[in-house]
Length: 421
Image 1: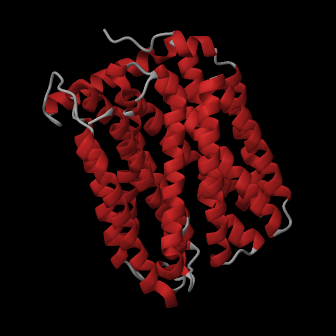
Image 2 (image 1 turned 90 degrees about the horizontal axis):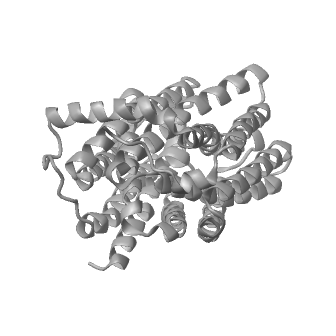
């Protein structure tokens, strides 16, 4: 296979898995879980938040170890295949969920989200293999653009099924949407598994007790020595803070729009379509910008855009203004995520790429998804205002910006990563 085939198959996986993100995490399933499975009971919010946090916590704990194991064994594709099939199967099973099945449904969601989020560790790790250092930003941007195109495609596909609203009367159509989402994820992820190949490494087994023990030792070594590389540490800490705010905005955007501004299901669908469209544009444009000015400057620029997004959303007193904030958020979302992945890829040595992405996607990325929604919920409850809770996210963006400004870009691009003894 040519390099172009490898890149395209990698991009298609982003097209595939983002369908799960928009349907099962951001839009359809959260509302179905609350309105149908839990019959509108407020306890549904607590159970939903606990399910999201638990899935993120489990991925945060296992990602670095499994990342190190895949680096050592060379079986990265097998790990990615396992997590992908876990997500696909659990998503399909959620198509059988209904009223009164809250516990079983949330357990299936935890498995599905673990499969989705866990797979990202191994998927992102391929970036360094399929492209050169000079084009990492552009290819990463293409990936996120394909992902948002996948989100837009699944929303268009689901529009007839969700036209009746995410309510008990339309439950059969909504559940059919979950089956279609699982099939969409499966079909468009297959090219990656057919085209990309694993490397032969020292331990050819995908999993074993010896391999796990070795991986834990490798992770412990990385944790002990990571502070010896202050720019890497500052970047990961900065990523923790600003990604915390971004993931919280994604998780609460539909709830905020519906509860604070009175959006209908139809308006929410149009809103998310516009967000995905601008995210495609942002990912493509800022991918080129990243290669031109570097990932650090690009991240700083996108964080300034996020400040504008939050302020516009907080002061929005109409649906039209919130639509504008959403479109700007889409542009910032695609660009900041693509630039962050580019920076991490530049920092990471090839022989430890999955392990380091285990910390990036897992330990730092997923743990921030645990903290952000918790803070948002607490502030919202104390202040009795989702606007105040949204404004509180400026603190996280501010902390991330200050830490990013202290990262020396020359050190990031040229200094070797953590060395193993």
